[in-house]
Length: 639
Image 1 (cartoon, rainbow, N blue to C red):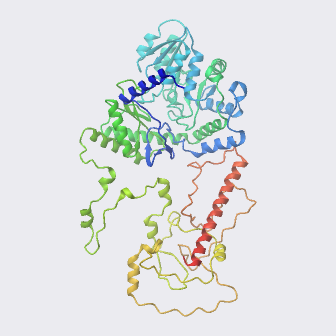
Image 2 (cartoon, rainbow, N blue to C red):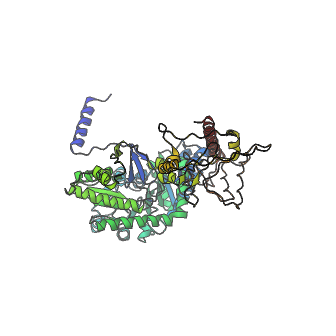
Image 3 (cartoon, rainbow, N blue to C red):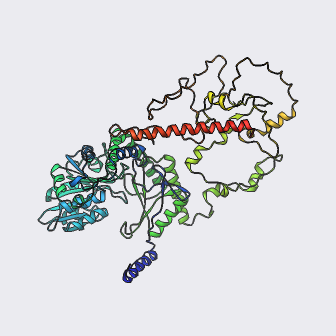
């Protein structure tokens, strides 16, 4: 039961938030890879995520977590000092220290928790802590938790920092390296020299630069040649590494002090073992592919900043965080809402996330973004700016602006053809990118022209072009063995009825109605002589592929059925004849390893999960065969 005084308090706070347009609500998003999300039925390009290298959608990270969960379970059951410290936790700390170039590292549950644990363990009553006024909220909370004297210096004003460092006692200097809202950067070499003169310990939060800035991904300290001057680095696995969790990279002596004095570390259940395995896999990917991923990211950032400069937008920062200042919170909300209507997700930053009067539109770039998506964002920003200035008088959406009018359609068509009604695009079903990839396009169906058929002929589909179709063009034709057709099809096929006026033709036969009309005007061909009776063996019913082989070509060998003793996770061998793979319309192609499907990790290979994957392959194969047999039964019944 909530007391009346508290009910009144909650009501007043809610009314005040709504009056100031500061109410925030959770939205249910469906994540579709690294750069796209779906809200309701709308698919949006995500320019608000911190997934700077595009690893959040990499299934190698997810597969490493699933494999470790299958071997070790999920929960750890206790804190690190009791029974929660596993071999994978220790291995993760060793790999993290090697990645950051420090003696040691200590893993925390999150980056927020890491800042709380470090500041509260290294500072206490009687100490002095100096913090940049725009530091992250976790640094502000850590300063309050420590009980030390907190002095806030002006943002990036290091003369003010040196003035406030005067005095005796232990001193800590705290700053972000890459600030998360406007993307501005701290001058670490200058801060390090000031700390050296005053005997202060420098602690930096490198969360937004970790893994995506610097030659080896060691963030702003490496980029500014200040690795040796920074004693403590706090960062996360949850941004550029695409996972979750925080860590502190430091010396062995500082790590030992944190283990014994950091209350957020001591009194928190250890990170799940499966999460530690996912973080290890992310570091492994970074070692192999970090250079190329950072190069892609910097290319997208360079393109975006060049386009914004050409469009005369004021963009702050230098790296992948791009801030566009807004004159008011309402204008920031207007930009965000208009961009969302155009399929782009950019969240506005208002008080209390930023100080009052510093509202902005925050754009976050990922290596997974494409040049087309970046250009689309800049074009949308220009359109919103024109609407905000009252220059947009058309009041048309992007779809309605492209839709042709009825007079234009009638003028474009010849007089011999009837004019068609304007298409009602608002009634058409909306398909996502995944659904539309499974459907055959009109170009795919137009490649196949039906030959004239007579009673008793075998159905043979021939391409209208001499070039053989690719695997993507032939995905409508099932891939099944001749043995299955012999068992399912009858030897004497019934004649194929011609499409009547009541029953319209379906499939590829409807692609060329003019050809059927021209054939109707021609005289009927002379009947062919009856075939001689077959020998003792029954004739085979041949289903020819879409590509005809030359007469002198050697027929390809039939694929050998998979042996039951073969391992379930072994990939199928390619056909020796080099024929294109034919996929069913309802089956998606298996992506290559490193793109969206993970290879088997060497350290966490699990036979149970491998067996599950193999069973899934067998189930799909059986389902495909059942579908083929049902089709042949329909042909036999004349449906």
